[in-house]
Image (tube, rainbow, N blue to C red):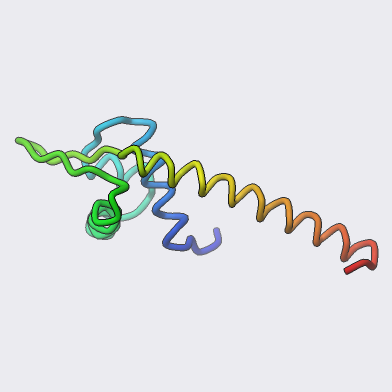
Length: 98
């Protein structure tokens, strides 16, 4: 498995929150496959960017914001565009063009 970038991990966290709704940190940790202490740092970053809302009550939970949904949409558009460019470049390399 290739090393994931910080942005890839951000997107996985946001996807987990999108799928599950308001979620406790352990569930996010399981969904992303990272230890709770690392997820907590990522969630703090995402919260400071306005992509995640921290819901404090008896048990702290996290939810994705509208801005977080917009980020995910932009991330997936960019990822598919980069994949398209990579495939196109690979095809051009195979045919001797470039």
